[in-house]
Length: 130
Image 1 (cartoon, helix red, strand yellow):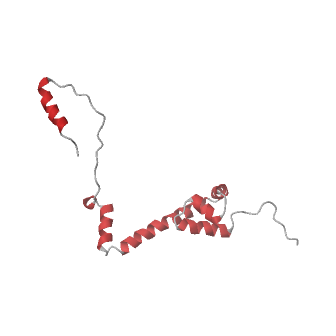
Image 2: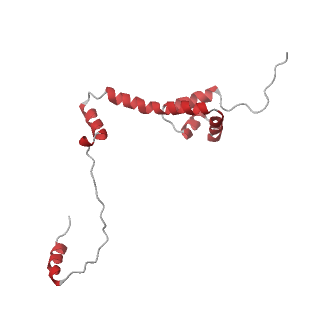
Image 3: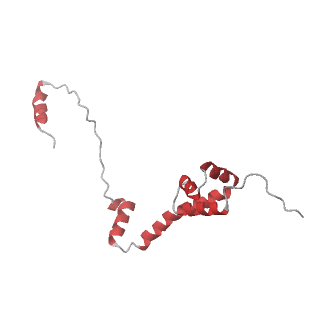
């Protein structure tokens, strides 16, 4: 029997490329960064995704790993009072140190005052803001 030769271009998405993509996604890389790391063009990667939709599901799982690892690390270290307080400040409004600010219109307004209001307006004008 004769060995059949493959005809056409060789596949650009090899096992090595898939391994590199997986490694990149597991450290939180986006698609562009993963393609750069795997040394492939983004359009090659997207063509592969169209042909292999199961890879998208795997990728989604890999991308969540850094965040999950960080959450586990924080949870394991909540015995540290500073870390515990920082965690509460982010997660619980009761411990939050967020500052509420209001933006007011700073455009000068023209006020028409009667003669009796003139003294009050003059006193307000004399008070200089800090």
